[in-house]
Length: 313
Length: 313
Image (cartoon, rainbow over the protein chains, first blue to last red):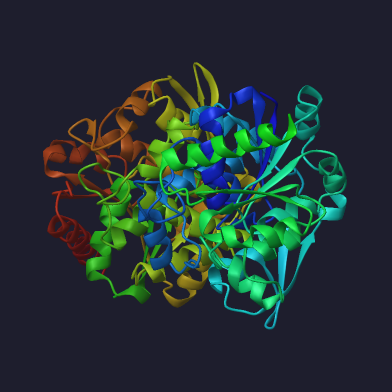
């Protein structure tokens, strides 16, 4: 099997990442997580997407709540609230331990990549998960209510402001994770998987890193549409696409990724749209993309890999 | 009633402080807590004695465990341990919130005095509690196994090393809390109460601050012996006194405080020692000093105040 480079945002991406991890050996899968959402909160560095993927790979995700750890408690957060601390971003007691350990690692001079590897090792995660960069890139959302940091828009304001554009502060001066080059040296013909994450908010920060698009240009790139039946599985993708004047559909996703993505993976309910996507110069893979169980995550990953081999080899 | 300035260490001091708070109006009591034990741990500033008093005044102490908050949980700590973080100093989920809020306050430029006042206000504490200083003073214990920071000696090493001496790093350059002067301007004839805390480890850091002893010299000072019947109520006071060659008794405490303390408060079981203490030039107040209930805390405080009035007025 050839190496697979997966680009992931948070929850949706984490699901496909854990599906891939079920069938791809650890050495042959490198998952690159968006860190444009990262921010310091209550004195600790929070990496929401990185942690969503890490918890998913460790089998610790809370699938009902849709974020954070299962079996979580909120005693520290409740007390913080009673002490007047901001409560718009919830940190669970067990999740908080992740941020404290990461903080200590960063304070001692280790990189976010190293801190992530240590956390993954402790959580029994065998697959390789890295932040997109070890430098800070801050996704900033420009809205009708002004510019705001990602988490302020996403969590505090519940994505209510009208989105006008998105910028990635620091991206120009950041470098993509060097582990990606190392991985590609070992797996020259790597397939790139863009997980079903928000293209504008979760994948674009990764693509905004210098030389990242160039790196992907000559490789097979397969993207899973986060829009199914005209709605986002989770999150504000549909709302944002509407605000940006894009078709709120798998076709809109394909248009957004045109020139980068070779194969669009869409859900069966969107099969009628396949010809519109093919008209954009992409291949289309139609399958079940709703990863509601561990088995369905594995099946989607399996189907994608088989589809690519069928066409390319 | 005249103003009362109480000097306190952790648990024993916190009990008497809460007894005093039951009978003295908030404006007439200033509790000064030792901060020589303070240290940064897992990225947050921990003030063990200050918090013991604060939780006691708020009615939140865990009287069975003897430290920390009642109804505490340990989910963050358990997870930290599983992630490889040091586990020798336990931070409860609710207690952790205190340290996070204090960290944020200090990071935003507020003093430890201001941070403490904010926490107290949120916890409904109406009496005045201040750290002995807003500068860092680090109690360092010199032992047969070398010098070590207080919490390393006290918690990590369980007070097992033989104590040779104690120093207070930074004390010479620190200033005692200016709120003490403000309080004494309002209550010139203040009674000073030295709570039943460890003289060498909990009270000496306060007394080591420049001009602190001078400030107390011309005021009535009343100390409660933390040694009852030849044993410490809690903690290593008896062990340390033996290692330093002091009599392990209320007389040893009186000798240690000679020249500073005017009235020694001792337990009924130590009544036979009264004449030995009087021979040191002190008055002796004999009463029940085991503050096992809220009522007994109040009774000890009440008795002390009545005793002083009887002699001095």
